[in-house]
Amino acid sequence: MKKHFYLREELAQAWQERDVFKLLSTLPGEVYRDKEGRRTLRFELDGRCYFLKYHAGVGWGEIVKNLLQLRKPIISAKNEWRAIKRLHQLGVDTMTLAGYGERGLNPARRESFVITDELTETMSLEHVGLQWQQRKPTFRTKQTLIRRLAAMSRKMHQAGINHRDYYLCHILLTEAFAETNQITEDTELFLIDLHRTQIRRRVPERWLVKDLGSLYFSAHEVQLSQRDKYRFIKNYSGLSLRQALTEQTSFWQKVEVRAQGLLEKWHRHNPS
Image 1 (cartoon, rainbow, N blue to C red):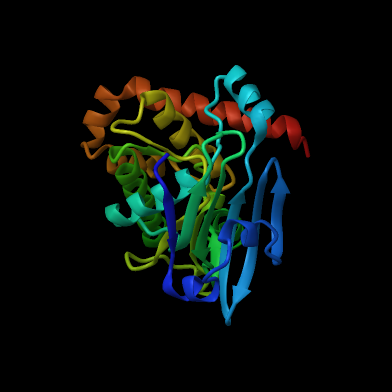
Image 2 (cartoon, one colour; image 1 turned 90 degrees about the horizontal axis):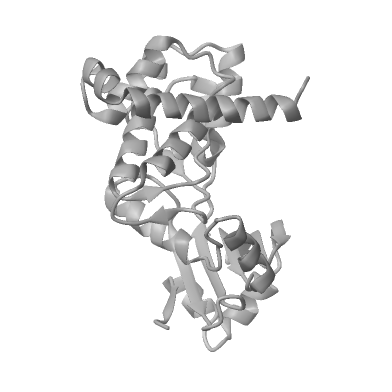
């Protein structure tokens, strides 16, 4: 097995001559998740804040369960650091790597981790949608955000990456938006929660549909006009609207069906 290990200078100095995997397995901090062999937590070191995702191994039971459900099991943090590196190459804003590592041949007991700098003073686009229910955005702000989201989605998908959890809550922007209610071309949009991403030469259509349908569903509380939807389609496809609607009719219908299916499921669990 090829060895993967990297620590940025400040972490390497702080943890020199330590078994980093053993250290991270019990590292104290603000825990966000601790189940199924995976710990996610925020920790501080010398005044800087980081996020750690540590995988202790999911066990054969979890691997077999995923395979029986025709799902690719997540057995390592490798997905996340590969996706972060690739997105940086593409010019898509995301997390910044501070460290990563993997060891062990047994896939059920493989240890791995990824450490990123904390993204401070940010808010998710899900909260932006809620804010817009109270304070309507300007036409320019809405237009800019749709164009930016379409460009991010297109870059990611054309590079062979699909997210698998592509919802507005996994896209962050600077918290200053809460006061200004404006988004410009300079506003950073950070794509996060990349542990389930898939990277290959070309994304199969069904995974494109899942990503875009999930994104569309997550915007169901935002009042989107038909023109808003057409604007996204035009910018994502890179075609004229007439071409996109003529040549890709079936594809966008599948996206709509996917979004409506998620919305119906959401309503069943949230009847109020």
